[in-house]
Length: 124
Figure 1 (spheres, one colour):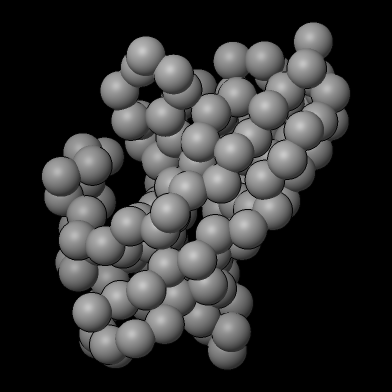
Figure 2 (tube, rainbow, N blue to C red; figure 1 turned 180 degrees about the vertical axis):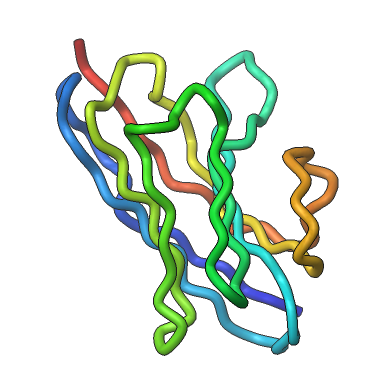
């Protein structure tokens, strides 16, 4: 079992920045990925970014490239999502997710554990 706890959401004006954190605990795995997804009201959950824990390779949705950066702190078992130049369309509940594989998938069903989510609101 893996526990994921997100933090850092909130209200920000368009053009502003937020940094989300996701602390992982529980069972250890030798190779895995941590990802961020988001879900706006009435929409499906969509992939935002992911990072391989070993090696740190990163992946991004086209809609966030250049504005959002995923990173990790191995010592703290924490993954971050730095979001800059936020737009109203970035508003959503953001979820951290764990995948017991280093092969990327952007499909939510490919992830094994999920955090409770953190709300990001962007005012125009």
